[in-house]
Length: 159
Ligand SMILES: [Zn+2]
Image (cartoon, rainbow, N blue to C red; front, top):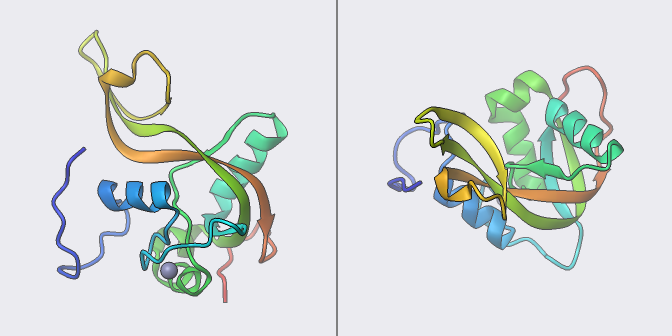
């Protein structure tokens, strides 16, 4: 999906992910906050909400791909995100290291042949319906998730 870009203007819209910026961060493995290039030769720093990390762990336990639309985040920016992102403040966040990533698919709206639109569909590359998807965010499968800060069932913030 195409979106306009006005870097440095206006106020952050935390729940509105900019598709182009998100795709660039996923494809190039850049920090989602500052855009800095991360070292591909090392495990990547990544901040997950407590609930997303739980869902990723559940997928791993069931031997399913652990798929996320959340791009990586450098360690200094993880502290900023944990403090300012309303979702992370509400749900709690965990700073992790991710050993490997693989492009998996896209999240978007599916315009099906029955003329119904289904929002927030996760679709894997190779799915024959992918031409009917208005892609909004790139999805990657992550593997080898190690928590740098301990998780708990209570929402928490990274200090
Ligand atoms: Zn950063």
